[in-house]
Image (cartoon, rainbow, N blue to C red):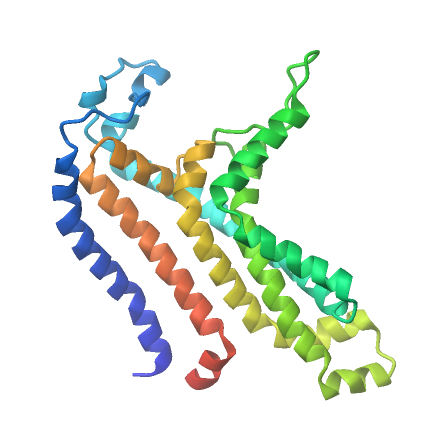
Length: 295
């Protein structure tokens, strides 16, 4: 069995191990605080949609909480979470690659190149919940007006319109930072090679050299960077979705804990583990040495 197959087998193996651990530990752990009601202020959503509200202790499952079958609830929530992750990947490819190219071209200018690398490093180090709250406060402050009720952007709630902007920005930042840093490092090495020097000596334009001669050597790094950045996004997914009330898989996992829904928490946690391990495999396989060994 080759190295690629072994790396891919880590995905189901990790999910099975996580299932065994969660299935054995979560039920007894939840019984330790079973006598307590849900977290303060947590109510069933039925009252908000016109149905008879349930008391806190009567919300025993996610299906009770939202008043719909779990399968339909999960499919809808999974689509919401995948939309954020796919959008973050697209933003990382576009913005991260552009920043990486800029940093590589400015590598001989200490201040300019260092500013790009330093800014992306700082963004990658900021926790997702801080970014989410900062964006909410910024939008509320900038969009606040005593004369009008118009808002700059919605700061919470789900919608396939401007509602997606803030959660998408929050989850995109780690992927953009990783993509920019790895692209800059790899592209800087490529630009110092002999064949790039020869291309410049022939009078080729910088845009043509980067697009045709340099970027093909950077593509494996792009996949590695996106995989690594989206791993951070998946780890931040529960808190980001909860802050923005996006009601994705991550928010369902937190709410399952709040209502003591063992099955709902184990299932949503396994989905998050699957996403995390899959992205880890993508990042691992995209590394040049892994590709060369697999060949």
